[in-house]
Length: 103
Image 1 (cartoon, rainbow, N blue to C red):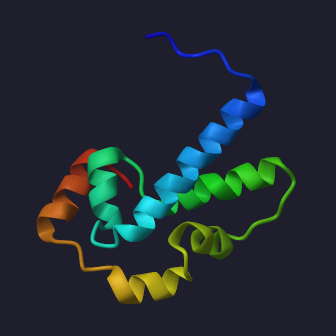
Image 2: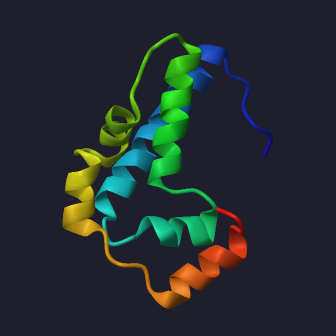
């Protein structure tokens, strides 16, 4: 089935809705660690918050990293870390080192 024709405003609305759903999903899935996301998908919540900040900057909006992270995490990053972040296992660290050399 071909992709339906749509105007730019509609496309932007759909993209924004998909983004909001992704953020909501990541907020709900606190069991999924950032290192798991990096190892499987090559990005994590921190990447998403950085992309958000960069998009804001392109529009001339100053947004600090902690504020962008709070938008994505739904709470201050330090609070999320304290509540949900676990120490990465040796296996997770090895996989990360293999897939992201020099990171």
